[in-house]
Length: 283
Image (cartoon, rainbow, N blue to C red; front, side, top):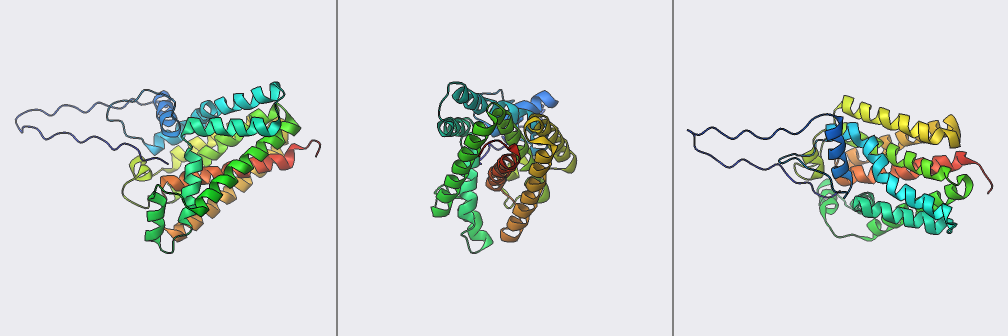
């Protein structure tokens, strides 16, 4: 994940002069939605002066922001199907548009996370996670993520036609919110960076966000894969969250923005794979 702006420090003033009040950030779900959109995408959104990303506010609005962010590549996927384009072409084009809208956040994150696995000490792993260069593990991770996502969308497009669009939206919503479990379960691994700036995710904001995401995902996916398919996707996602959390607790003792984004990439593949298994149709 890219580094986020830090809060501005007030300039020192005269002791006899009253300090200027700091503008208050707007509150409420609408303001949280704007913050989540800015955090997860490159779409132009209004930002309040001095506003610092707050992971607890972002978590509550993430499911709704995900619908908008994923809506654009979902429309591309639908248009490809409607125009009769090859399913692989449509799926890859959709994945590319999604990466462009998010600044390739998940792709960059899974690449950094894979590179981080090559470090021999916690300090070296954190150094690798921060390094802007990419290694062989990182290239492999990005190729696997983009390749598997493209193949999964193509398969769903072939078997479920327009239903693949809604299954894709469900996977995006669920994976983005579920990935925030890492920010709840582990403390930031360092004192600066995106994760430290956004803060520690508390229980109720996480449960609120994942509850909305689970409901939205079920409504979108159940007509095509059934409640069993939705349940399988959620079960495997929970196991992936626990496994990823245990892995990085052992490797660095905490979490970073890249690891949260990397978990989102893993979960997206897990959810899409679950949908493929239950989607049915000719093979």
